[in-house]
Image (cartoon, rainbow, N blue to C red; front, top):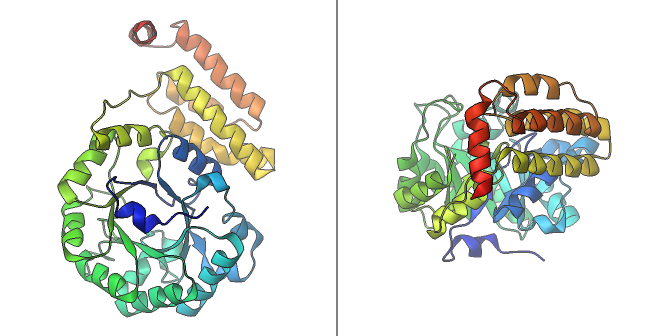
Length: 347
């Protein structure tokens, strides 16, 4: 059943979004984040040209399960006509809850085609793309932007006003420019300025790495929703921590190593089932293994082993072997870690 995401953004509870992330926010990860408390998820960004050409791999990115709703499909491109046609196709064929337009991707191969944040160099083009998409489908059209293409063009309020006037129903701001990429700190004060300037809901994005960060963003910016991106990598439980912080409840601790591995393997099994090609799914999942094992004692050695696995059985064996040595205190520097684990288990 379709959900009106605009109603969520204007309701009493601040919704949490899983950001669209190429190679990360696939369906299995979206479902996992929904289970941990993400209120809304968005697909990996998909090329409008690829959709219209019927590219098989592109169309695979558009698949989702009903349990993922509310879900948006994010499209990108620099041709208003193609963007409108692609939005209509996505609506008619897949039926998501909203269409999101990517004006934020900083990756060179996207920007050189004037897609993603490349569009921010031409606000008339931004206007025409939004109008074309909004006219092509009855679904809400939302947009994700950066603060500008570079420091010279940095003006998120001006960009936001163009988007609102063109028909965007909500806007997400990552307050860095394209040339900033992911360096430095996100300027949350720009989210506040955008919220003060617009009538449509504003979603804040950037530098959410803890539950406390989510609460602070809402309090400092007044944003209507919060989008979590890189902070979710190997850390889907961040959504439950953010929800607790927003609701004023005690923030649950990070899972221990056993629970972290259990979640990781659940994610991996779902990825294999969704991909259908088990070996390719495992190879593509290796990046997640790197994130799930970040910060662990002797984690570098573990990752070197995990980045070689080609089957689910190998993955399970490597993680179980590490867990056995971890619980036995046999890893370098494990005396204190073991003591913490035992103390945590006794609580």
